[in-house]
Structure formats: C-alpha cells, structure tokens
Figure (cartoon, rainbow, N blue to C red):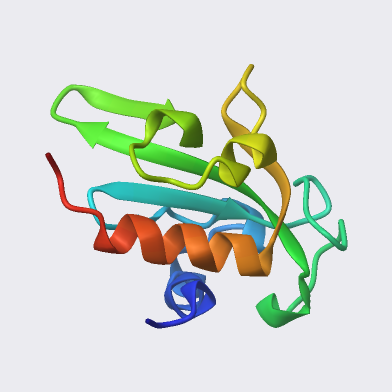
Length: 117
C-alpha cells in the first residue's frame, strides 16, 4: 500500500498557510485521517519543515463522517484494531500526540482495508 505521506503531499496545493498544519483529512476506508505537523502541532520535530519526510511523528485524529457531521473516533472504538493504537491516543480528546510514522502507516493500511459492517 502507498505511503500515507504521498496522500498528504497531494494536499499541498490546498494548504492556505503553506505549512503542514492545515492539511485536509485523507481517506482511509470509511474513515478519514487528519495528520498535522507544524510548530503548533504535537509532532517531532515540532517546527515547520518544507519536507514532509523530515518529520518522525505527527499529530493524528481519526474521523468518521456522517450525513449530519463528523465525529472524532478513538482507536479503541474500532473493531479489530490492535490495542497498541489505543495507547497512542488520548482518551479525553481522541488525539494521537507524536504518533510515529510507522504507526500511522499501519493505522492507515488497517483502516483503508477495513470494510464497513
């Protein structure tokens, strides 16, 4: 499967700030992943880089879109997802802080292949 950063790079034209912090969510099956990086996001390094591949970790939110809105989803609420992902996301706000590239890729691949039940 493609590296999730390829999908993020496609959004470069849509970023009004010119930084990675305003990326639009990428499709991952029936979910969307909001992946952010900038001096204001919880990423590593916590700064503005021109090269997306220079980041070792990102801030991540899993979103589920419905007709009447969007809900932020905690990984523990997704059937079949490895429990290690639940530990990477805060249960209070469903945000993954400084999630490493490898884990995001695994999450992206899992969600992209997950069928809606």
